[in-house]
Image (cartoon, rainbow, N blue to C red; front, side, top):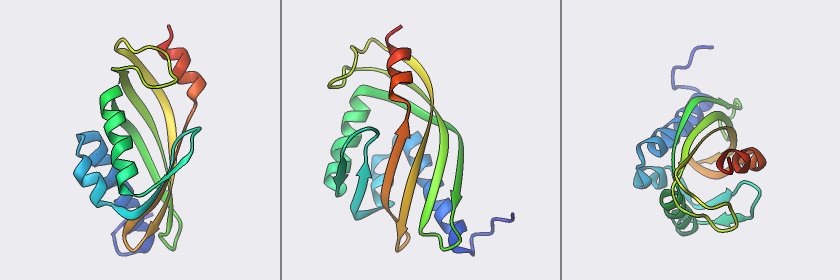
Length: 142
């Protein structure tokens, strides 16, 4: 497949890759610029949060508790470009205690993960994240 940026699916893939590039740079403002105002965020094994304010709060907690980089990112999109999926490997460090999780002491972890996206008007309207929480807990509990 040739990705030339002219198809809707290409634009969705580029959007998701830009989102992850901003994540890896730690550029919260750039991430938020790629989201619809009413972003729906499905937290792994948690509830759905809606809106940029809730997403900003989530990112602040993540920045406080974790240092992560996503590698080996693969993104796919449907032909209409309104849905996309990504698979990646999280390389992280657990920096500070997160509520309901084991104590943090700088434990490192490597964990496969994935996400599903809705795209609307050139922005991410939904992101649903998934990873194996039991695997993560086992890695940080060693």
